[in-house]
Image (cartoon, rainbow, N blue to C red; front, side):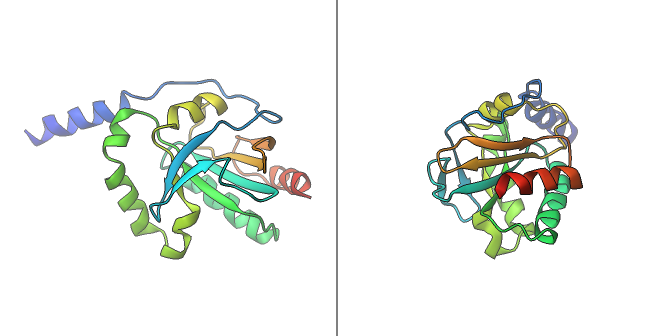
Length: 172
């Protein structure tokens, strides 16, 4: 019985994902989406970001955390200081049904003082994946937006020093 339930859960969780070709979105308007921070605050992006520039590190799978962590370390080592948010972006109805469980698991692995910088996107997950593309889903989507939501920089091929330097140039 347990194995049948496990197989059912796996099929349910994996059946809701669609493949979208990667896009080049620099110069486009970031879509209006909403999510919930690990502090349990509803955030509307880009409307709630009032700074000149904001960096979004979007991950589509748990394995994207490795790439996001490399970006965060690189940004810190390079002295880049701007508002930066991690956006775990999960498409499909099944993840929404388990969002409380998923978010609780993330809270256990992230220090409480960082919870405001992690905004999970469930309802609009499909829209974001379609907008940027979700091929190579282990790679973070690095998106620099201005205060009106225009995308100033976009990169989706995994961390590299060259990409970090180009991002820094876009920030300055």
